[in-house]
Length: 324
Image 1 (tube, helix red, strand yellow):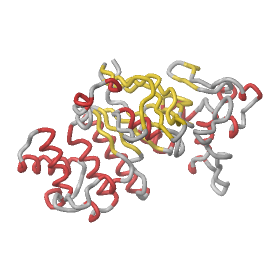
Image 2 (cartoon, one colour; image 1 turned 45 degrees about the vertical axis):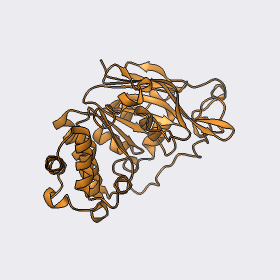
Image 3 (cartoon, one colour; image 1 turned 90 degrees about the horizontal axis):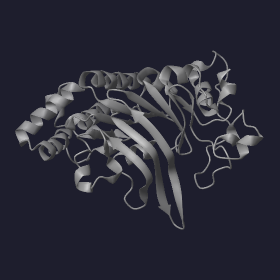
Image 4 (cartoon, one colour; image 1 turned 135 degrees about the vertical axis):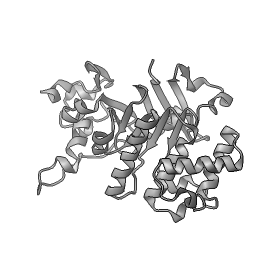
């Protein structure tokens, strides 16, 4: 049995006078210990998909419109709120973007971690602080005993990210969702954080969903990848196959836009046009206005995922043109 199975998940935001579908018919699976890369431009629905997995959508207007999220055989979408608390943090942990905003500015990092441990595990204050030191040591924070009394704003971006990882791992989750965990970090620190996440995955055995706009990050860290565009997954494949032979024009365009794929001295390629507004989607294939492979038939019908080869899916009617 898969650890996580997402089936036909759709998420809507209720706007004045209409409903905006931010995630549309998304399906994927995740095996124990596997790392899935969720890739796409800003606004493609990656973060909303991840929030929906543990029902952390904005309370005023976000809702799961349809679909299932089965975690170890239980559908999280239909769990009562009281039962859901046993999953958040303990079974599934999520690291949001912008580590600094995740911390209370008037509490030390030690107190914040200890407060969670005291609440979730019933530890005494001394026991919780001792466990907090162990977690900070686990993520490689220097002098963790002293750092307990630091405030988040006193730490560098890389150290804050390590503390955020420690906080996410406090409940010993089986699935860690890391939403762009290297945003705002310099290239050297990015590499350190990604190596740390993989090392912790190997040591602790959790599975991971890694949200990123960067296929280079996928190449370094992931086992499989799902490419999202305008609220839908347009291609899924094992990492090595997607990076060497993408079977959707959007995946191919993302590959060509990577700096390390461009010959020295040549201009960096970009994807023509802009992602569509979710409130004014084009007819037919959503990528059609930006697609160099588009033909007349792409104006009509809905481009849905189909299995094109074993373990691979694509939402392009012309996937064979890319396979040649």
